[in-house]
Length: 384
Ligand code: SF4
Ligand code: SF4
Image (cartoon, rainbow, N blue to C red; front, side, top):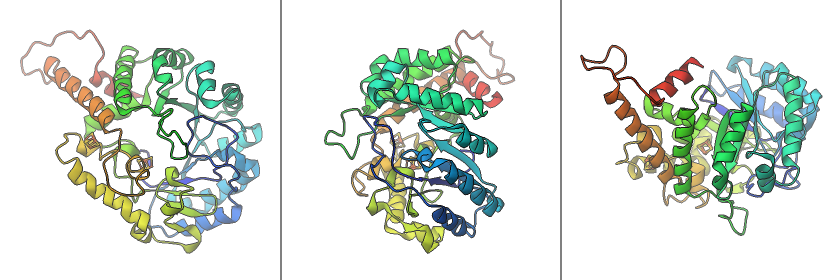
């Protein structure tokens, strides 16, 4: 996490795509006005932080159009210059134009987009024509010099083609960042696409092996992050830290939520930017108290788990959004986290004993290594 104070701006929940497992778009959602952006600036002026990262998310944030970004970016960058804002955006790229790309490039905005592997797999999950439209936008973004990375959503269907998907990312030189399909709270059959925790765990172990076998050729971001968690004994992405109080999301109408995943759920509105709440007031709201209660619950529920320091019970949205805030368990992906954290820990321990680090051999003969290990991956990611 580059910057621990993170504000997600959701200019709209609307999206022209029809991804089959989507749970975060909403037809007919309004688009944020520039007046609301001015309110965001006024609200954050006195937030007491010294850095901020803004991520534009959706829905599909490019639906807001070029004019929105031409006005919003200078307002945020200049009005909050004391917070040294960084920007990022998550988009399907369909509505990328050279006009928008140029303004995003001016602010050095890295883009995250989404493809699920080869065209046929992507379109079977995200709708006919998705891949082509995304790649067209990718070309436009690249022409403007924008950096684009792709998130690959693995569903219970596409996981069966994991090898094809991995090879696709490798052959194109794309960094692979994966995301497990979540049960949709908007669907009559919420688990239709969802990746079961056990399958997710096995997928992570498979990708750990792939990342090590292909070290220097392809990068799997999640594997780097998970190894860094174990190595440093600290969470390195939001899922594995207490995100409450350091991450907030602002919906199209200026409502403030604990994270983009809650946007559009009225019971998770903490306040509105027009009310200029302090961060303490946000955390004292009902949704804020529910988030804090989750963190306290993890202290007890995960007390006996050796990974608690760098897992922290996983994502609170996954744990308490489906229960309306009731504390009935930690993140349901817990078995996946345990599986991969155990695997990384065991391998790291084996490596330490089998091959002491340079200068730490204590007189033992240092054997020649055959296969890349966790330490090699850590060294490679530090040097990158
Ligand atoms: S609720 Fe989940 S996705 Fe949102 S910031 Fe927290 S850990 Fe990340
Ligand atoms: S792996 Fe499971 S039990 Fe361990 S800290 Fe994470 S959520 Fe809790």
